[in-house]
Amino acid sequence: MAEIPVIDLDLRGQACPGPVIETRKALSGLKEDVILTVKLDNQAACSNVTRFAKSQGFTVAETSADDDTFTLTITRGFSCDLPLPESQPHSVPISGNYIIYIDKPTMGSGDDKLGRVLMKAFLKTLPELENLPTKIIFLNQGVFLTATNSPELTTIQTLATAGCTVLVCGTCLDFYNLKDQLGVGQVSNMFEIATLLTGPEKVVRI
Image 1 (cartoon, helix red, strand yellow):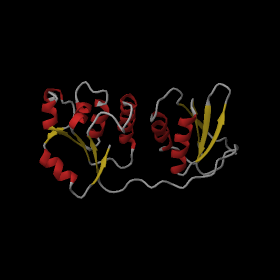
Image 2 (cartoon, rainbow, N blue to C red; image 1 turned 90 degrees about the vertical axis):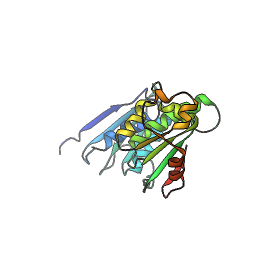
Image 3 (cartoon, one colour; image 1 turned 180 degrees about the horizontal axis):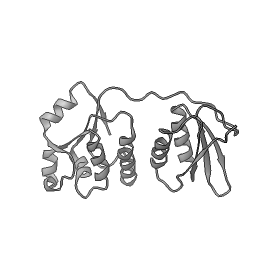
Image 4 (cartoon, rainbow, N blue to C red; image 1 turned 120 degrees about the vertical axis):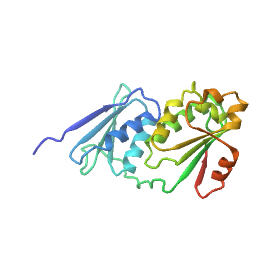
């Protein structure tokens, strides 16, 4: 019997959502007769990657070493020799059209530093979703995310290239003197924004 090939993925040192994104890319081309091993350096990343892999129908086994390295063995079509956690029900991907509404450069309420980290992780994750938003609306302080000096500019440009319409409030750009610094998207107005927010598409406020 032929030996089963193993693909090794070392994701130690990567911040969220990097491990899940890279694992998703590897799993998208994984055949039934291949094993994927993922090395991680924290339990949170292990839990996130495990949950994602199981949601896609894969079997996951976890081992740990004395140097705080965690190894996930991910397979499809056969069982690993390692003890396996109980399987989880598959997640249901978002269906239908939806709009994302962002009015500040942070995500959630509380510490602003944490909020900026969360916003960065959220925007970085969006291009990896199976169902992209049809539009992203930026207004009030959210327009700072679309400026040429924004750390998130490249990520938002990726979304625009993928077909997501990026709309940026013109009044807000003028108020913050950012009109000449717009790095991505098209300048919008309150009529267009109000029409979209009250239209048939689902609106997700971040």
